[in-house]
Length: 112
Length: 115
Image (cartoon, rainbow over the protein chains, first blue to last red):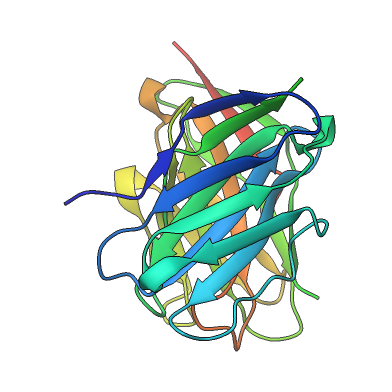
């Protein structure tokens, strides 16, 4: 079946602009995760949604970062007033509860 | 706090020779441990996972890992490397008590395979 999809695959934006990154999880997966992969920091957890529970936002690096998950399915990660240090690959993953996470191909964000 | 340390940032082997990628974990409790692989410009793929059942875990593509509590290690091995194994490998821990929760990644080990 279809895997996790993310859009756009690449995004170039100017410093100070807002960006939205989208994740479509595997149908039926109750959990959704966002991670960031950058050269300096490796792979970092950002935020985790599980069903109707309050999300675990403990990995968000600043209040410029936020995420929503509408209807228990699609998620959007928003970065406001982007900075150059936000340049990274943003990865989304989904899982059935208690099972391994399936990753999408990522969105490469470049802030110029 | 839970963490993983991958002891080598880069490993180079010849095709047909054994592969050893080293990982040590730090955890107050018995964690869930994983190895993921990332091929260039591809998404992360789960190789294998340890969740307190058998200590020797077999994964896809001939890889296996052994959980050694006394050494706090979870090294990844393969008897014979193939060119297609060239990729980046991540040792990952999932803190206990967080069913389906966040993953904590090691810094990664880049595996090169020479013909």
